[in-house]
Structure formats: structure tokens, C-alpha cells
Length: 474
Image 1: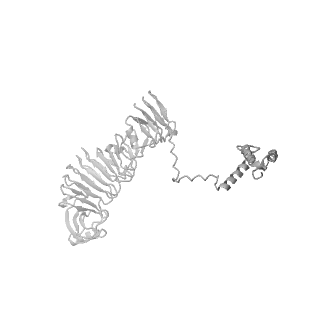
Image 2 (image 1 turned 90 degrees about the vertical axis):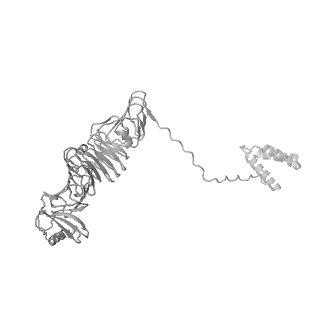
Image 3 (image 1 turned 90 degrees about the horizontal axis):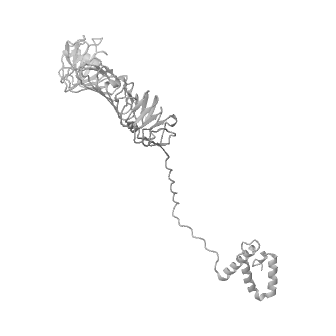
């Protein structure tokens, strides 16, 4: 009975069972075991008979397995197939944006947060962006009617999606940042009564509004037109084209094109115009001469700049900036243009089609020799040296470099019987070889007439016509 777990039964059950077996006899112990199994069946969780029921079950199972060779323990469940890592959970969709809606009538709303979305719907509406929400990132929609956006100083619209606002008001002096498309979207009234700067974050085609004093262009290729006012502009790193009239640029405070290869287009000059203190960083300047009265145009300073000057109806004066520049006289007008070089070694290309008598003034010296192309090629051009030449001698130098050119000229003049002695002496000099090879026009106008000094007039010639002494004038 101990093997059957009955030692774990209450003593009353154990004693009763012992008496019962004694009464029925050991011959009937099998019947007693069957009856006992029925008594214990289903009582595994019983507080009193549970231990006996569990022990009884274990003994019966062991006896069965031993006598049959079969196991009552179920085999382990097979491992699940290896299908790789579990799939990522499906993304949770972002909640739909909250949109502040206007009404069908006039609305005057104030942006409550930078991330707020606003749709003003119908009606003549306005939306104010104040200092606390001056960097909006949501969608700002004006609606179907003529709507106005009011911007606090320092507002940056470039992170927002803006549409449907025809009018804009810049409420105070400051910088207002936006994309080119956003700026061009304001097609109605542009109110800006202070000193404002539009800073653009994307490149594009921009026409300055008359109410804005200054523009900062984005990096990239821009085309900027000054519109109707005297606006200043600062370019980016791309190749920009800047369009001004002469009057507009004369009133500007800064035209700085930045990096890149930039072009400045100026219309016909109607007065003296000096852009040397206004313009920086422009590589090509295009100017048209005056229509009636001759005026003076002074170019920006800086080396490597190209000035294309279209001859006008009157004789103008063109003054090149410092640093070594290139002047192209273009157009077909027969008017006479006077050219004054800068402090660098300039390249002056006279017209090969216009027949005007151009004047090349002093400024080209032995230290920085200008090159003049097409002198007297089609026109009766002259060198205005300040002293009329009375003699013109031709000199030939076999070889000279830049450093020895002055001494070589003096030696060649002596050898030709035309020793340097007076400021009325002019020469056409041909250098056959060396770094100074080429043809030169020279006049001995310097302070020391017996040598080639730092103030004598000299230019290098290319494509020149026939030159005589009378081409050197006072």
C-alpha cells in the first residue's frame, strides 16, 4: 500500500482500507485496488486526497510502462520552422495633421505655433506671423480670394509650404528669408515701409520689388533684375546675371556678385556713372553709351574684368578700373570714344567695324604696358599723350625681355640715329624675340628725356593700321 501512495492518505483512510482488505481477503485485493482507483480518480487537486491521488497515478503509470514497454510521456513538440527573423511590425501611420480652418468670410488669424497648418478658405483673409512663430514649418494656405501674409522681422518662410497669399507686409526693418518661389508668389501688393532685406534660399529669376532695399541671392544660377528702384544685391556662389539701368545702379549702395562668373548689364548711360565704389565681384560688365551727350563711365576695380562698351550716339569717355582689365568697344556707331586705362596692364580692343576716331589717353607705362588692338584699323584713332609728336622713327630690336625692354629701346634709338632727347619724339618699335616680342608705340614724354623712364607713354599694338607722327596728339 505504501507503493500505491496510500501512506500519503489520511490515517483514517489508511486504517479503513486495511480493515477492508482484512475483511474481503487478500484474494480480492485486485477488486479493492480498482475500487480505490475509482475513489482517487479526479482528486489530484483535492486538499486532503490530492497527494495520495498523485502518488497512485505515478505508480500505475510506472507499472504500465514496465509491463508494456510503452511510454506514457508525450514526445516534445517539434521546434517551429526557422523562417528567418520575425517581420518588422507594420509602421504606425502618423496622425493626420491638424489644420486650423478659416471661415467662408473674412478672417484675421495669428499663427499659433511654427508647426501649425492653416487654411483660410474663402474670403479676403490675413495671417500674421509674429516673432514667436517666425520659423513656420507647416502648410499655410490663403484660399481663393486675395489674401495677405504679415511677417515679423526675422521671419524665415523657407521651411513652410506657402500658397494662396497674393499680398505680403514686412512689418519692420530686418531680414526676411524665403525661397525664390515663395517670393515670386507674392503677385499683389508688397508692403515694406522700412529698410528690409530679402534673403533667398533657392536660386531663380528675381525681379526686385520697389519696396525692398536689399536682396541676398542664393547659391546657384540667378537672374536678378532691379525692377524700378535703386536696390542693392549680394550674389551667391553661382553664375549670376544682374540687370540694372544706369539710374538704378547709381543709387544702389552695394552690388556684390559673390563667387562664380557673374555678369552685370547696365543700360544706356544718361549721366556720368562711376561704379568703382558700388560694384564688386562681377566678371563681365555690359554698358551702352549715351544717346545724346557724351558722359564718363568708370568701371569697377579688379583684375580680369571684361567691359563690353557699346558705342552710343555721342562720344563718351571710358575709364577702366585698377588691376588689369579688358575693354571691348562694340557696336556700329561712328562716334569717338576716349579710353583711359587703369593702373594694371589692360587689353583695349577697338572696334573693327565702327569708324569712329577713338582716343587712347596716357596711363600705359613701361611698368604696366597696355595692349591696344585694331588701332587705326578702320577709324582715325589717336594717342592723346599730352604732347604732340613731331617725329616718328621705326626701331627694330632683335630680342628683349620685359626687364630689359627700356634699355633696349634707348640703345636701338641711338643706333638708329634717333637718340632719346625730346618729349616730341615718337617711335614704332618692333621686338623680334624674347618675352617682350611684339610691336609697340612709344613717346618720350617722361621727365627724363634722355632715357626710357617710368612715365613715358608706351602701348603694345596688335592688328594696327598705318601710324604717323600726327597720331600722337596733345
